[in-house]
Structure formats: structure tokens, C-alpha cells
Length: 476
Image 1 (tube, one colour):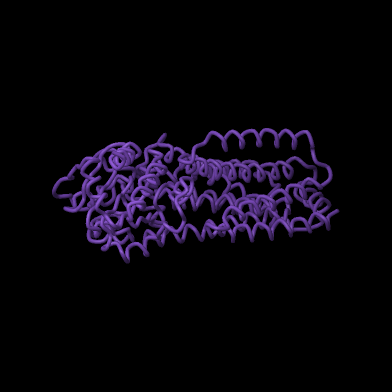
Image 2: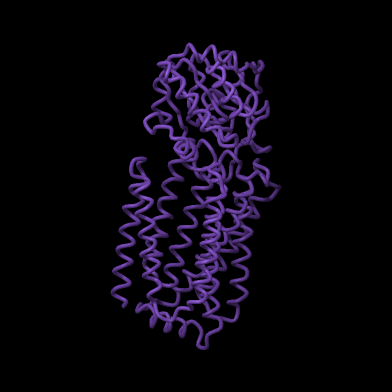
């Protein structure tokens, strides 16, 4: 039976790898998702082939988890995906944390301590590992799983605006974080040396506490504008924690799947940081929008408001229009309205594109998901570098709720916290309309120099209502 299980694990791992590769292209993304799902089903069936399982507990867990998943899939709107991803990251971290705790309890309660635990583990898996390896894997699983769990809860609170989106810090927070990290590392080393010693229980309690608090304190100082990077990083953490959990219970497919998630999350984090021209350390410890950080040069001039009727006359004469979606489009659920307006413009011979910044929205690929939901053709989606090469030929750029990703202060204001960050240069278009709910600074807390440019007009109000108003103007 062990041969069959390992063969199924290999098949599942191969399907995971090909599935992730296919997710990299819009044309094959759905097939890749299905392929990965089949791989996961095979991995679950293989795991259930192990003997000695508590079937009532497993069936109960499947029913409970399935019910929660079904409710979430049917009730959570597409605009709620960032919060849902944050919660899923947190649950992954919690699951890994619990695996680490359960394995520690086995060591702590079994007669003979770690030696008996390793003997039982070898009898179950057929693999013998040294005591230090098992103890280190348990400690790291608890540490990373705990940080992922509470860090993801904070991210969920910021994304759902149940917590302030601005960075939250207090005097001495950096020193406290360092002390907590050193405490956690000390607990990991102590437990690795003596996993069944007299202080093992105290050590694990200290480790769990430090990990949970560290998750909170390392996430609250990060500003809302950095959320896409944080989500990618927490996703990587959850994968790394799962991989260590796989090392604990010697489950090959869990190690492979965890490594794939951890590595892909780290790669995505690197891509997001590059798109913002910032280091990961700067994102984690230098969140923009902080009261203690840079505020940028004070804006001169005023924002010039316009009506939907004014914008209609300009759009009606335009031959090339670019829409730049941001989180405001997600909040207003305006993706279908912008698609309808784009179709009207195209029917009049206008060239229409959608320019998507890599960190637009509140999670990686957020805008792409929403535009796909509205059936916006993938060919109309342009990346930042591609649209910037032709942006000065664009007649009208329509910015829908985006803020920092079009802020020209990133190019010419050295006092701005986002100075040096690549942006979509919509200010070079002949005319720019910015759809915004009000005159406030938005989620990141930064003033936007774009709004004060001479060629920019503000369309205040709910983005969906504004776009629907423009559609009505064309219909009359």
C-alpha cells in the first residue's frame, strides 16, 4: 500500500506543477485550476488510504469544511476576494500551527518521549529521522503558522476596513518586534535541543505566544497601499508552514505542495516589490502613509470638478480611450458598467484599452479578476510598461478609483514616500477624468498630484453611478 500511496503522491505533485504553470496564462488558467483540483483530489484519496484513521472525525471535518467552503463560494462577492484570500491564508497558518501543537503533545504525553515518538513515526511512514530534525520542524511549523494566522487576521481587518488602513505604530514597536523575534528564535533552539525536556511545555507556550503577537505587530505597521505585497507574502508564509508540517508527519505531497505555494508566493512578492521599486524590508518597515513618514510636497492649485455631460462630449469625440481601474472600481462594483461604456465607445470606432498596474487593488491580480468577471477581452488588458509607451497618444484616460498607481509625485517629488515607484503615466494623456468618491486622500493616505494637473477633471461620486450616467448620455 505504501508504494501505491507514494505513486499517487507523485501523480498529484506533477499535476500541481503543471496546474500552476497553466495559471500563468489567461487562456489556460481555468484548465490549470481544474488540473490542480484533480491533483488535490488524488492527494486526499492517497492520504485516506493510510491505515488507522479516525473516520468519524474525517467525515465530520469534510462535511464542516465543505459546508463552509460552499457558503463562502456562493455568498462572497468578487469584490470580497482580497478579504477571502487573507482569511484562507490565515486558516492555512492555523492548520499548520495545530499540526505542530498536536505532534508536540504526542512527544510530551507518550511514554519514552521523543524516542518513542520517532519509533512510532518510523513505523507509520517507513522513514527514520533524527530527533533534532523532527523537533526543529515542529518548532518552525508553530512559529511560521502562528505568524501567518494572526498576520492574516490583521490583513483581513485592514482589507475589510474593520481596522484602519493606515500604518499603526507606537514608540518602541521596532525594538519590541526584535525582542519577540529573538525570543521566538531562542524558543526554537531550546525546543530543538530538548524536545521532551522538563521545560518543553513552557518553551512551546512561549513560542506560540511570541508567534501570535509577532504576527499582529509585524502587520499593523504596514499601510493599506502595500496590501498586495503583504497578501503575497502571507500566502508564501502559509505555504512554508505547510511544507514544514509535511516534514513533521513525513507526508511527501504536503511538502511538495507547501514548497510550491511558498516559492510562488516569494516570487510574486519579489515581482510586486519590483513593480513598486521598493525592497521587501522597506514595505515591511517603512509603510507609506505613516504619520511619522514622509508626507510629500504640499499640493498647489485646486481639483477641477466636471459633470458626466462634460465628459460625454469629450469621450464622444475621442478616438483612443484608456481605462485605469483601481480599488474604487471594486468597491463600486463598476466593472460591468465600464465594460458597457467601453463597448459603446468601440461601436463608434474608438480604440479602447484597460491599463492594469501590477499592484492595483488589494491583492495580486485583483483588477484582472474583476475585469475577467465582466468579460473584458484579455487582449484589451495592457500592462504598465506597454501602455506607458503610447500614453501620450491617448485622447482620454479614465482613472476609476486608482490613487498611488497614477500619482506623478512618484516621478518628480523626492519628498514623496512613493518617489521612484513606477506608475501609469496617465498625466501625459491629452485629457484625464478621475472617478473618485470625494476629495479625501484615499486608502493609502497620500495626496495625489495628478488631481491638480491642468488636463485633469474630477468626476465625483460612486464610480458605478458615474459610469452608468455616461452610458445614459450616449443612449440619449
